[in-house]
Image 1 (tube, rainbow, N blue to C red):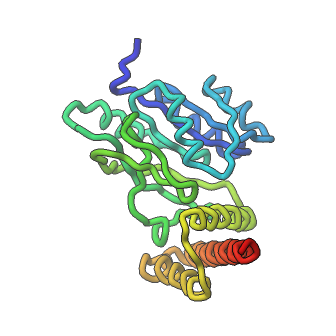
Image 2: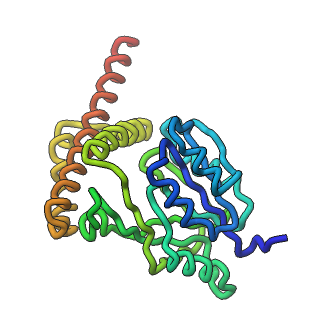
Image 3: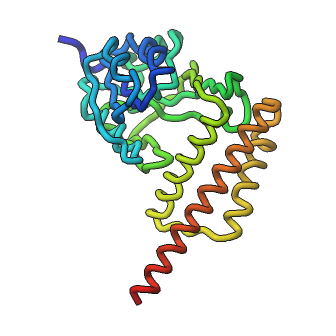
Length: 262
């Protein structure tokens, strides 16, 4: 019988992820188990996943990533859980660091965070949004859960340690794919903001995107990534514009309905 106190399960969300999934799951074979939560993929995602695990669950995403990840936690048996996206992979150095961290009896922690080595259009991004702070990706089971639909966040009660080695994030997408993804995520974020009671206005629509661009391109040194940094930061400007434009439409339509009812 395995020692659950220092065992770890990997939770991976998938949706038509055949281009990157093999690399992702192959980097997680050191885990005690791999849990795949699939949003009814239409490609070979499930077939590929079966090469690495029998723990594959089909569940509709319904635009709620937190619910999907929390569902994954419930399916795990280990005492620790790591979350890896299907276009990410864990290096051997990082896996060794994770194993030594969770098995260290002198470390009283409930989670661990790390940075990502981010690639955009096959170019390694070192500055701008890719140089942002640590993200929490490991949790001691029972110490917290994922919150918010978009952007989702892993909320932990207790101590979190920062790991040194990076998680590799290597997308397999062209500029059009990335633009379509921005449209999709901007809709999710605007809906989440609307449900939280947030309002939009002309000021936010015009200046929040500009503020995002200046922050990521200038103050976070995105310009040091050259043309790729410019493109990425401009895409984030578009994303923020769509978020507040969509939110304005949601606010306006709600006000119209309220006026009709009255």
